[in-house]
Amino acid sequence: MKSDIPLQMLGGLTAREFLRDYWQKKPLLIRQAFTDFENPLSPDELAGLALEEEVESRIVIENGERPWELRRGPFAEDEFSKLPETEWTLLVQAVDQFVPEVAELLENFRFLPSWRIDDVMISFATAGGSVGPHFDNYDVFLLQGQGQRNWKVGQMCDSDSPLLEHADLRILADFQQSDEWTLEPGDMLYLPPRLAHCGVAVNDCMTYSVGFRAPSAAEVLTHFTDFLSQFLPDEERYSDADAVPVSDPHQIQHDALDRLKRLLAEHMSDERLLLTWFGQFMTEPRYPELVAGAEVEEEDLLADLEQGAVLIRNPSARMAWSEVDDDLLLFASGQSRLLPGELRELLKLICAADALHSDNLGQWLHDEQGRTLLCELVKQGSLGFAADE
Ligand code: SIN
Ligand code: CO
Image 1 (cartoon, rainbow, N blue to C red):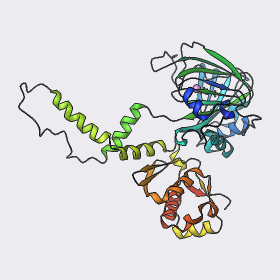
Image 2: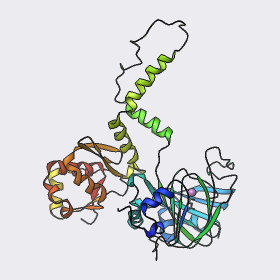
Image 3: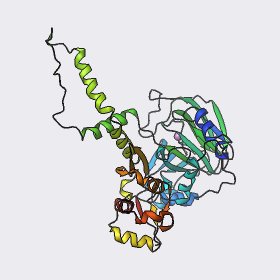
Image 4: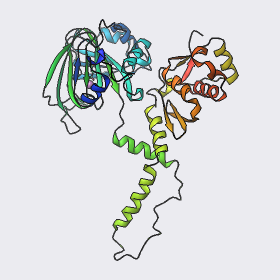
């Protein structure tokens, strides 16, 4: 995607300007980011998803059995008819994995790395419905899909910001409003991480939240060191072959810290392992059980593709690629593969294309390493045959 073309979905800003001035910094209201927006999902279809076992859903009722009552899905059909007339919200996570038209919305966000995108959450709210003033630790684009919603934004928050006592919801005890807008279908509001916000439905409305993934520093440290430690032999230890006689045997001298720092720095700066871990971590699927592999033989795969079969990316799979020296790394759903540089165009195609077939695979079908890779990805479940083939 070109970074210097004004984009309507960014209110006429170029991707470069948006990233420089707003991304992770301040909110941006974009009127008619999507003109004539056609809501790809009806409230009934959203409610239908919330009945499914594998779909994560919640209902927040402002004045339920207690203030801000939270119910977790999957829901039974009759639960919806027992809800109050107004002031409740249904929220369904990762709808992009279940509804291709919702996944298509993400094509508009290709000016950001796809591995930064987490999911599209969709909410349906009745008049007065809200999940309360809160902050999120990630960036979000809030696209109004249907009806109107009033958004108030407030102060920047952090983990010391006082919250209401609530077992499940993180509702701010104190909200200092700094701006307010009412969004119509097609309008979009970008919010940086930690900015307090509160959206209240004016009437029956649907909001699409495009949320992003950003590991916390604590996650980076714990997960990376766990990953790293698999490669470290037990005999590699704190060592002090450079020791000199100590004046006080009970004192930990700073030269001991220097040895530790050297040991840590040596491993922490291993770029290849850091990249491998990061790619695996960022492509971990939200629902690993939905990335189920299939048994397939390479010859059969080739024959099928040659006869017109289509491979599609599993909507629950996540993919990315990277370079390491002259080689390439392909990350697919939490796994990595080291591959030769000649496969670069195939890796790019696999990551970008929704469907793979003999037309776009072309010569790759006759490349042994390329075929093996496709076969492995089918076995892993990141790719699968299109249903109607
Ligand atoms: C909502 O859609 O009701 C809530 C979205 C959010 O504030 O993160
Ligand atoms: Co939020």
